[in-house]
Length: 174
Image (cartoon, rainbow, N blue to C red; front, side, top):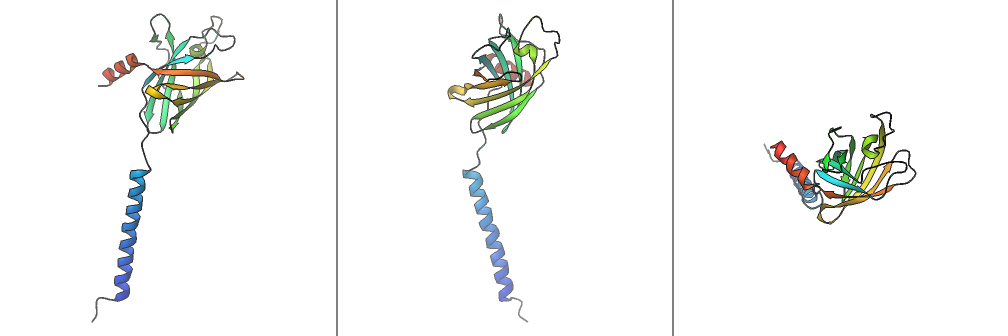
């Protein structure tokens, strides 16, 4: 009785070789083509290029970003211009977006009081829809534009890492 059939041996040999070849291709692709995005800072000082129309807006706001790979969650907070501290009116993330090829895209709802500090605002819980498009530049600085619902044009913005807030967040997390 012949237990070694040529067809069976060739079938198993081809199956094993094809699995090894597929493993080699997938491993090579993963090592050379797939790269994790660079980590972003957790907090940025956001500077508006110009004022919103009919708005007594702050010159500086705080953009907090939480990153999980290419996915981003964030919040836009107002600052007190005298102390440069954030107001604790709304801490939970209200923006969501993606980070791809050094481009950041965030969109969501932001309190109108963060964007516009008019004294005649009747509803303190009034929200505006915002879209933020930014690019990562040298030394972790960001530049781009923000679009606010109800406006016809985008406003240029720039952002620099806020080391003071990053240090306090790290201390509180550990």
